[in-house]
Image (cartoon, rainbow, N blue to C red):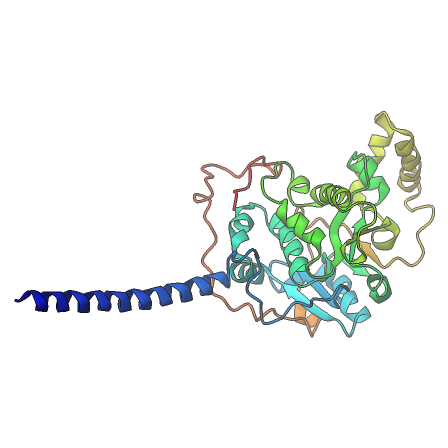
Length: 361
């Protein structure tokens, strides 16, 4: 073969390689764009928008979020759950199950899937879910044992984010905290509120009891730090209103009372605790509070379903709230749960006060 033919052959080969490389690069970029739909890309953890497009305004949208492990909720919560739809007939009611929550993470917040699956206890996953859902969609989240007593429209139109304060007796005597505790059994926020993003960003690496890793103690700590970061006069759309206990949690549970009454008699108490203990001992003796608040928005029945399994059977959510959204837009097939071996757990599960650190994303 002459030198000229060799040169022509090499040139043709070179051009062919460029064409092949260009085609491969195109499909690689297409794949990357597809992956950006479900993982962290271009500085956003929520690059892909779901079918249910999240509202962008600064008010709290008319959406009620509730969750249970499946669509058959405890019978004991039936009337409490129904109260939300009855008092908010024009609102959307979104019901989440373990399956749809898993799909939500797999499809829209995949970068946090390892964190979500890392949590051993279902209550931790349920805690984390509510922060992400309120960040993504906004609305009102309420546990199944929270009963609605009057419409929330007027209150929520005045705030961009609302948290419920636990009763002072519970915060300062039952929990022995030095500040009021913010509950995560009821929360309401506009979508993309910076406080919910602040909470999400600080989930990693937390250790200790359930209440300290994903629950009310964690939420209270995050609220204190967030308030400090935004200053004394934040913009209205970025503020957080920690409502008095009389708004959403006017009463405390029997288990808390049984714990607090002995504490009031044995512990060395501060002046505030002494004042609260006088009320607690009155309830313990007379089995009723001196005075109930007027017209609370909700009340909390304190079932603690993550500790004690509810009795009395179950009922399908559609029998309770016929228009409950099934979250069917979460269509992605998802892989099975991570096994205990994959978690690195080679023995029995630790107690609820596990001190394992969460993985870094």
